[in-house]
Length: 110
Length: 113
Image (cartoon, rainbow over all chains, first blue to last red; front, side, top):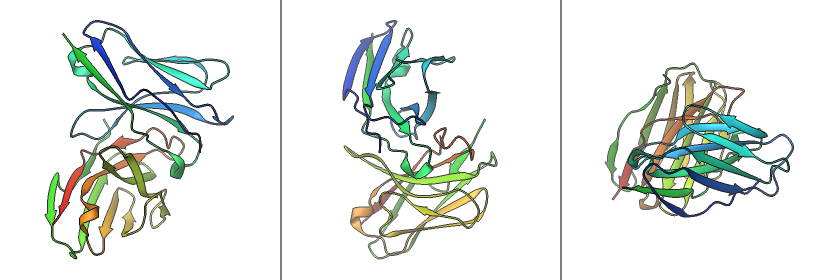
């Protein structure tokens, strides 16, 4: 299983750009990188998925360097409502191998 | 929008009771999943199903069983509830070829006393 490592927590002020980096040193050739967001008392929500270089959607951007051993989730101009736990996953291609770690708890303040 | 619903948000059961947790999705997804989430442990996969009547064990299947008689419905069964099964239970679904793009329900917080 490709293990992921990400910071336990991060703090930011409203309006700033937040970058959360995830390490996945033993990522396999066919693996994708997926990020989820979870608010208290809710199920996780799919944010973005990528394989290499850069992916952008209306919520976030995902940067993946050429060696794919890490990835960075970028949240532009965060607001208080972005306070949540963010999970990085590496998908090994079979549903049984999706592993959610303990995630990064992002706290956004005024 | 994809919608995954779970039968209860909160449930309190006694030790030894048989517990059914129901999950329904409305997007015709092939894959369905049951997780439990505990503080400090993240989400752990209990079982998943990629088709009607098909099931696969996840990381922590002991003490649980599942049933998938219809594509849209996936049930988690605790045959004899124990206090260590007190947890938040989350159901999810995903398309067959995008198993990492999972859509989660709101969760059921189960307390076993």
